Image 1 (cartoon, one colour):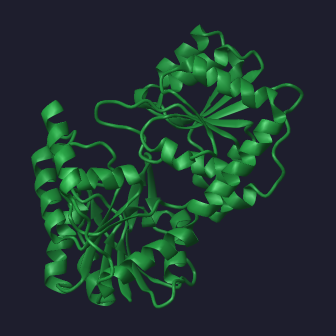
Image 2 (cartoon, rainbow, N blue to C red):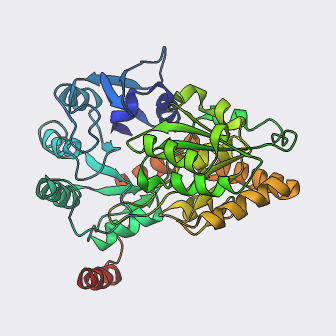
Image 3 (cartoon, one colour):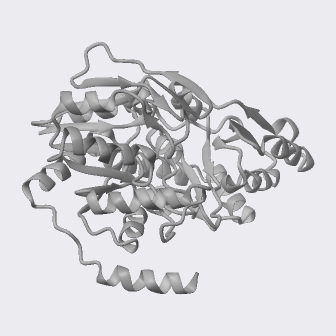
Length: 398
């Protein structure tokens, strides 16, 4: 089974683990198209090709570095299609992206028989409306991809429901991303003991209103033994530092730059709890919460707001609280701080959850099985009648 995967984040060395796992699946001949350079979280990153990969890597120049939906390849895509001669073309991109548009166009030239699939995270139903000035163009690309795609892979069940509400009729599979083995290796150590009464709470992510960091500051201000370690960047950083000062947190709240990916497992292991206090807005809700999975794999108990896909990701392996409710967050932090058996039980549940659902070998096995089902005709199209009824009702309520 010849497959071409198109992924702008293939430029990150940490993601080679994803493709090595895919290429290790029986019968898979894998080619990966990666940018030569890409901007990820504000950092310019040059592609790092592994010494002896079990798959082919094609590098291309891109336009729109760091623009997730508006990037495109200037070179490399046609060459990758010619080299791979793919039966499957798997975009790890949204169906409305410029990457998707040019892939459809190039496949007509170089791989007309290939089955094209996309990957989606979108978990808020918007009837072909997007929070961008080029919304009309995204809608046009999205509809074209819906007509042409042989299938879709969804990060969560929420994302799959959104596809159905929008009328996507081809087969789908829910296959969430995994996290690198380094996090599981870090989690092999015994749970970190509480250090002389101090309690270290961590946050890793962006400093934006929708991330709810204000709620975390407020919650910790009522826990005298809590120390906050925050790793991130964003437009609200100055405001959050001022808020921490107003709440009297002082030296108990320390702001750090974003941790480099290779350092994140060690950073997590220094924490007694990891919090993701996301808040849903009119056009965004938490799409996965990858840091929660990383923390669970690393043996760190997690607490999170019930925004978006977070309840689906955690299941019973973390503590949820109603988003925006700082007092509820404080109560859950206090539980982990004071109840050592409960904390250790949560650590074990988290490890099991991450190992069962969020590894790259699991991702690779599920994705390659979906590809085979599509090629053999075993992947069935769904009944959309109920989804269309709900979509009409939601549109009327909007």
